Image (cartoon, rainbow, N blue to C red; front, top):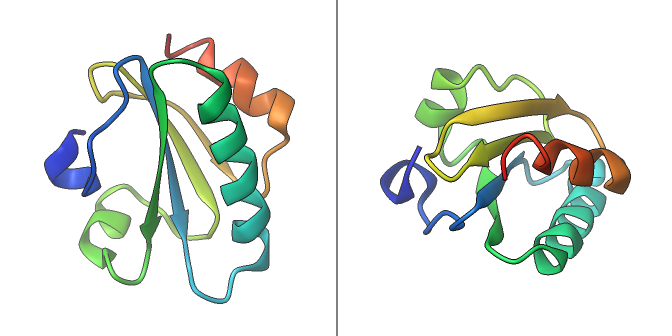
Length: 99
């Protein structure tokens, strides 16, 4: 996946893609965790996608709950997927598969 699909420039090394919805309480905490991890690792960015606004992409990727987090490598390939509120340590570990 690239900038056209994501709506933003992906990271040089990896991208944390978060699918969220307006009334999702765990999405707020997920946003904070992913932003913190992206700030810690050079070349990693966090992109949040509103699942309702981008319904076509949401369906294409099989996202049926929010938050859903995809970890993309430098080529835009999905290397990890998680549903629900992630633990910071798990996000950092998942980045290991991408960078």
